[in-house]
Structures are given as C-alpha cells and as structure tokens.
Image 1 (cartoon, protein in one colour):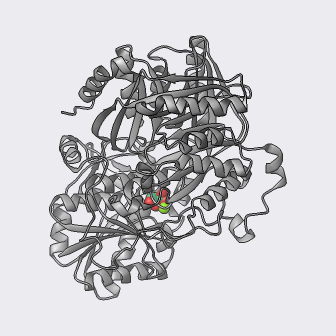
Image 2 (tube, protein in one colour):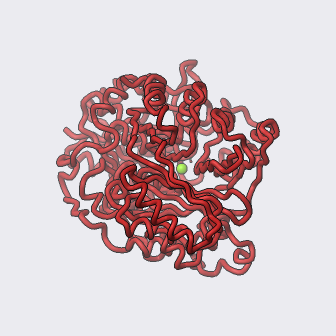
Image 3 (cartoon, rainbow, N blue to C red):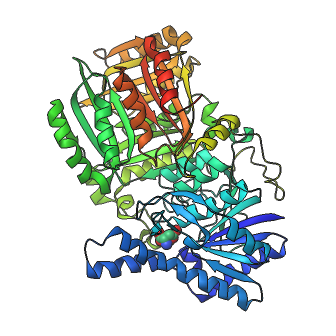
Length: 629
Ligand code: ASP
Ligand code: MG
C-alpha cells in the first residue's frame, strides 16, 4: 500500500470550512487505497499572533519559552483536523512532534531534525487511522520543545515522509498551499509567468533560495537527500500542481526553466584586502560563526597584492554583518563599504549543465534593456546578477504592479524598479512563457516510472554519504572533484557600463567556446573585474577573441590568460542553509597556505579556483575534511 503525506499550510486551514476541506482531501487519498499522514501548520496568522502576544510582554523573550508558545499553534490545528475527519466518519488520531519522537538539536527557534522514530506513526496507521502530525515542532534530547524556524511545517512533512521511506514505505508527499504550483517566476511581477508541471530538486532549491517562496528550502533538501517525490498543489482546486522530482534528461532540453528576483539583499564590498591565503577564510568564518548566510561572493585578485571581496547578505542581517566585519577590516587594513539598494536577478535550469551560451543570452537581454550589472556569479545550474537600483527611478515608479497585487507585494520588491524590469527581460529572452519542452508528464503512475538517478551527486555516493550522517538534517557532502581542464581569463578595469559583459561573452560564444564559472566584481569606481573559466584547450582562442573585443571597448583594459589553475568542487545537499561548508572548505585550504582565487556557491555545489600545482593536494585535504573515501 502506498503512503501519502499531505501537508496543509496556514492559509489552507484558515477557518472551519478550510479545515473540513483538508479533512476531505485526506479521506479522498485514503479511499484511493493509501495510508495517509497529514502534517499541519498553525491556522492562518496564528503564529504571527502568538509572536505579537509575546511582544506585548517582552522585547526579548527567551528562545525556549518562545518555542513553548509557538508550538501551541500547530497543536490547535492537529486536534481540529482530527475532529473534522471524525465528523466525516473516518478514523483519525493526532500527535504532536514530541509524541512521535521528532528529535531535534537544541537550537531553539531554528532547530534541525536529528531523527524520527516511526514506530508510533506506523502503529496508528496500521490501526486504520489517518494520522495527523503537528508541523514545525520537535523535542530535543533534554525533552524540551523546539521549533524548526518559520515555515518549518514543510520540513516536518518531508522529513516524516523520508523517515517512513527509510523503513520501507512507498511514499509521496503533497504540499497543499494557496497557489496552483511553482511558477516560472513571480506572477505578480511578470504577467506571463507560467505554472510548471515539473521541476527538479536542484532547480527548486535554487528557485526557493532566490525567493520563490513556495516551499521551505530545508524541506527540498530533505526531499532530494532521501529521494522523496513532492507535488505542490492548490488546496482549493483539483489542478495537477507542480511535481518536484529527480533530474532527468528531458529537463535538460531547455537551458533555463525559471527566473527570480530577490530584492531583500544588501551588497558589501571589502576593498584593499591583502591577497594571501587565509584572508577570505577569516572573513567568511567570522560570518559563519555569527550564523550570517552569505549569498553571492565575488573575489577579484586586483593589482598590487590587494584583492576586493564583494558579497551579499540579507538586508535584515546588514547591521550585524557590519558589526562583525568592521574589526576584521580594520585589522587587515581594508575598507568595508555598503552600497545602495540592489536587486538580484537569477536564472535557473538543469539544462545549463549541457547548453552553452546561457550567460551570453542573459547578458544580451539585460544589455538590450540598458541594465548594468554590478556583480555576476554562477553556480552549476544558475546565473545571478546584481543590479544597483536607481533612487530617482524608485521615487518615480511603482505604478506598473497591478493595484490588487500591490498589497501582497513586499516593500523591497516595490522599490526594485530595475530588478523587475530585468526580470521581465530575462523571462522573455528565455521564452519561459512557453510550455517547457520535453515535459510530457504522464498523469498517473508518474512516480513509479521515475527517471534515471540524479546527475549530481551519483546515487552510490549519496547513499554512502547518508549512511555517514549523524542527524537526518546534517549537511550532506557527497563528493569532491577536481577539474584540471579549465583555464581562466581575467579582464581588469573593464568600464562599468551596460552591455560590456554581453559583448565579451558573445565574442567568446561565437567561437563555440564553453564558459563555465563567471565572476564579476567592482574593483574601483567605474571599473569592474571580470573573470571566467574556459576549457584549457580553448584558452588561446578565447584569449584572442577576448582581447579583440576588449580593445574595441576600452584599449586600456588588461586581459590576462592563466593556464595555471584548477577548479575544485564540493557537491552535496544543504550547502547554503548550513553556513559551515564553505567555511570548512576555506579553512582547510587556508591552513595549508593554498590560495583561493575564485569562488562560486550554489545550493548544491561550492567551487573554488586554486593554483594548478596545489590541486591534488587540495583535493586530498577536502576529501579528508569531508570524510569521503
Ligand atoms: N506555523 C509556522 C509558521 O508560520 C510553521 C509553518 O507555517 O510552516 O512559520
Ligand atoms: Mg505558516
């Protein structure tokens, strides 16, 4: 018998009618011959209301007591949902997280799941019950109640599904929410946005991290790690929703499947940093220590032994970041600068693994819209660019978001005038309004004919890595690789104007040369440094093409080709929600005096460029650090 885990979010349980509706969905799944577990969030805005009540008493509630308080929201929902199912004549029983042994660490308000004891769940299911489980909560080893962080019920649902799968159940997990599924981009900003039928775990992880707020990132990490098929559906309709599944060949028929705008990040620049091993480690270790997640990182080698590090953090963390880094900057003799409001626009697609010229297409679209890029970073399946907002444009515009949608749009997004324009430009450039090619998704039995195993990382590597985990939610580093066949080209002092990157990459792409990593950073006022890697065999050709085009842009730019590099990459799951991976990586390399000259991060991959002569040594160090045989 199959097992369906259904998760209902707060809006899907807002009032008694909606609770009855959820109960009906659960009964329907049971009548179709499945065992059913229902995971619920607190009703409507219950969690926010509880937070507000704490705020009436203290500005600084203890985290332990906050968890005690917040966990009550979900406890209300489980009882009501069980009663609703009883009312409709079916058997149901409700459990809190602690009652079914959802054991977490002790980080109150942000706890991570260590293990789930499935015995009680299984007994209740075998007794013929629909089992209702409170999302978002668990219990630590001291038997204190914990919560998983805002939006954590998704994580509970997928974790319960994963735990049941580990004991042999054939599971699928349905996430009920108030939208029809996952869209190619935010439909409030781009009217042509289209609901996707299917998306891979990695694509969804990147979309989620970019602000496509349909699901909690940690829940998708769980799904990918334990291979739990997910489907996001509207609780008010029978529409098919969006399936989130392992990557398969057809997904790579198009280069890009989605685009996103993040308007809640701030950019910082650390200028005049000594260019020697261990410096970036010091900077990012300090941030990791303070649990500040860094998003984009671009480090440029600069001249005269000095480097510039540009990076972004959430606006909400800006003050803390500055406080953390100021003393380090002073100590290094560097200057820490915050820039004005920025927007990040990213494109994502598994097809980037096989298609060439994706960056070029994106940059050309932005150039045509006369949008300037301040920073560029790439991951294995995404490209992100940072755009500086123009304060005068912000004042003038906001009328283009339809009135009825304005209320639901966050202030940051309303101010992201150029960000929205850029998002529309790339959505159109990649034809995202058209149905995804190859997505002939079978209506039934789809999960049974699951496509081939994941590309990244290999199934064997992943299983071995899972076996080494202590807690279910620990970061999973499944493999470390060396790619010695890359060389790098760096352009110094590229004028900071719209269109220049586009011209460079178009010149390289017309030579049929595949560009892999790209990092662009600002080094001096009005000047950018652009580095990218190309196959070593194409270095001479790529260099010639770059020099020719750069000469037309500005003859004073310097172009340097470097064949003496090697790329190392670490693959896994949870690399960004666990800030420690990049830190450990930089740490072991720094300890041995291995200099990192380029960094790219994504949800599933961190890559760094080091000197070629130290590549094998670095590989061995990282394998040892992450305990990979
Ligand atoms: N009720 C919690 C929150 O609002 C958990 C959830 O909804 O997933 O954050
Ligand atoms: Mg909620």
